[in-house]
Image (tube, rainbow, N blue to C red):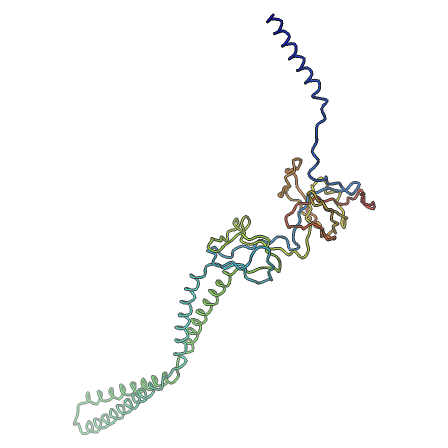
Length: 360
């Protein structure tokens, strides 16, 4: 009896399994609706390309002029700045100490120049005039002694050698008088012109050093190169800002852009480059649930094919290709808010459908 019951259970289970397998394929699969409607090329044979929204000025990265610690940050994300307005400031203490030394050196150089220009001192003239008077008196005395000696020599009262010594004394007194007169003229002439030039050059050098340090101090306050909007800020007070090219390209302290006019940079694959025509019509579709199409106006094409660098994340996107960049300006006022860096689908009229009209 148990044997028959076991066989009956096995047959029942097999029947249920066959029924489940046969009805599985008949069940209707529930397909979820698409997250966003697909983009459709409005041109019959138009070019499809990936595009990026950018500011009219492009996205400008503002780097630190010198490496150093940030002491002040003046602007926040979203603020509008004018060209020349300060964005952030680096530590200036080292340069300020150098500026103090340079100003002290300027004071020394200026004092030296003024001292040379003030020559001769009024207090120095009387002593040199007195020296000339003494030299004249000594010469007169030497001349008188020589005359007395010569008269005595005519009477053979003195030896010839004594007369010679008196002559030498007159010559020495004459030389001393000439020396005193020359020294007096030198003092009255004041500073030597080449000495004044050297002193003036030293003063100019000190002032140039001050100007150089002040320029470096001004460079430590990084200013906005354009009038625009702060798109991104990657720096805070106390952080270290590097002036290296690598840091400027990957983590620049500020990113600015002129949002008064937005542009679309379309990257056309090189395979579609022969289809490009100047002043072609174009449309861009904003990705997302509330996708919106924007009319584009041709600006220019950049005549340089370059490796594809910016990827959209699509699974069918090729990366082993080169692209030609085409610039458009957005003609229509978008309903949705647009952001620089946002990816859009771009469709461009080709030379195949020139003269045709976009299809809806």
